[in-house]
Image (tube, rainbow, N blue to C red):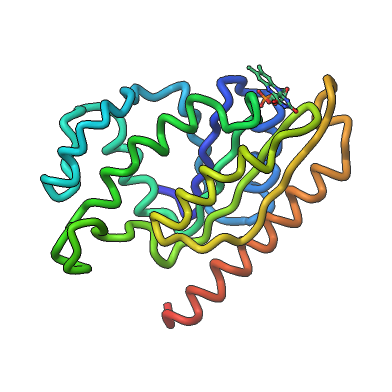
Length: 198
Ligand SMILES: Cc1cc2nc3c(=O)[nH]c(=O)nc-3n(C[C@H](O)[C@H](O)[C@H](O)COP(=O)(O)O)c2cc1C
């Protein structure tokens, strides 16, 4: 299990999102793991909301449990996605839709309400990376922000690379932005560790 977890919503393993995520992760100096959602078996959310009625238990038996364990063991998370039609990729959106079950874990026990359970990523930092040709990333960021709010994670920074039809490796300024974000994340993780006295 890693200290910093990157989640890649592009299926292109050497694509722009993956390159930026790798820059961020490496520059934190933390023990890292980059997960490609395209390697996992994650079914679509059927919208049954039985997770809300059953304290976060989802009837799907797939890789979301493995992913939850990875999220829980990380101190920092970086979500990366290409902009597809002014949105995140379907891979990333599907993971976020399914994560609603995580937010109903312990429902009623922690908050005493029937709407909110445990905020599973409380105390963890979260950052976003978006790669796009030209425009539309503002809308694409919205579901990522919503995930952060629902899970209780603290936003540290965002890198947006607008690269036309070229590769992000042609843009040293975006690679540098990604490295700067990595450094900011490691400071955020350190501050939290110090605060906890660990
Ligand atoms: C289905 C699809 C939709 C896209 N929609 C947009 C868009 O709305 N705006 C934009 O600027 N780029 C768009 N792009 C371009 C990608 O965001 C861009 O090429 C990105 O860098 C790809 O990331 P990757 O190399 O990590 O896969 C789209 C690409 C695809 C394949």
